[in-house]
Image 1 (spheres, rainbow, N blue to C red):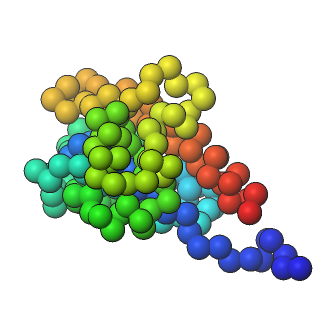
Image 2: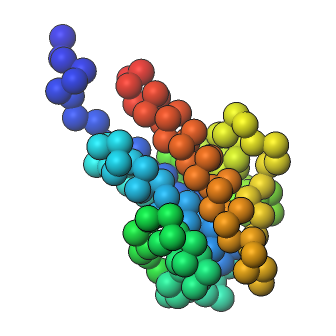
Length: 165
């Protein structure tokens, strides 16, 4: 019988999604990647983010997102990209920031079992959605607060699932 501690499993593929992929989903991608790195499990995950709309394709994360993440010690990386049909089958976990994007992905044929709301993974969350801070500079701290808490919970859940196999 193989030793589970020496078995090599493919990385768990996680995609974070919001409207423009310049505020919430890149923040979740950067935070989740940092948490996985700090836990020594970064190689166990393929992490990306995407937008349901393409008006910001190719843009770096929004300035206020960068400021807030860097203030918390996170590396900021990535460029906005539009969701693709390949994403529907490639990613095991498609994690949306709000109900509108969740519904958009389901209507595009993403398997409902793979699509979730980020805050649904946080047992302490009192709301379903990560609010969109676009146009409200004072909202980026709160956005990062809820994304951090939910990413901690999501990482814990995914690691437990990986260890159960």
